[in-house]
Amino acid sequence: MKKVVFLIFSVIFLFLISETTTLAASIVDVDSSQANEGIVRVKFNTGTTKKVKVLISKGEQRVQYNLSNSEAYIGFPLQLGDGTYTVGIYENTTDSKYRAVHTKSFNVTITDVKKVYLNSVQEISWRKDSQAVLLAGRLLQEATLRKQQNHKNTTLQLTDREKVNVLYSYVVNNITYDYNKIKTLNYDYLPNIDKTILDKSGICYDYSALLGAMLRSQGIPTKMAKGYTTWTSVYHAWNEVYIASENRWVVVDSTYDAYMKKNNQLYAFEKDTNVYQKVKEL
Image (cartoon, rainbow, N blue to C red; front, side, top):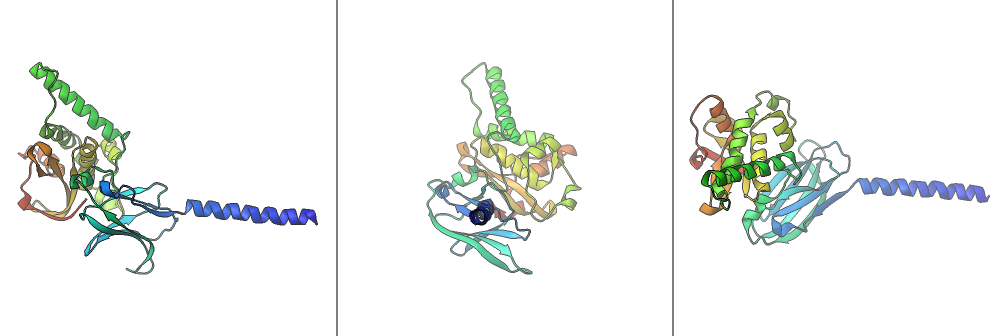
């Protein structure tokens, strides 16, 4: 009888362990602990194969992102200004209908809005040990040394515009446009900055994510903008970079400039804002 009771208890214990493990692996969470730095982090790991969306809203303003299963927290920008934000995770049910999986509301007060554009987020994802980030650091170190040697002054440092130009020039000179890639991408494709450097190619999304990550990692606020421009009929991505010494944002399109350079055409670092129609920024 004791053996039977022990066996039943063992089975129940193993079942509880199995259930606990499953619940631990299936997590949905919204971390707003760094909201005042302009970022919220979302964890979603239910194993679902359905489409999932993140909806970030403040008042009538709303921004939507795709979300996939991940064991890590994914960052999203809080660029709608100060106030009460609601972050919702929604799972597709049928057709265009979604059900709420998790929602969280919290207050945000950002002392400097430019902080929003320094973070590592889903579409401009980087780490300190990313190859692209390490490369950005080396490029700026080498450029600083050249400047000091040229002027025989070891105290000279790069200006903000010089830093931006070094990293922008690397992207323009070393990344080529992949015309076939766009045909093979899923709706939820996300750039991988280290893969872009390794492949030395990409689409506009990859160009703007790479330049954005390299600049952000060096303390230079950078936006990724999406929308339309006069030189192409398709949806496009580019960057807006903050030049602190000039206290202004400039439009930079490394995709277009790489194309122009390859075809031996003239191009300018700073673009005319009038030829770009921004639909979304992050």
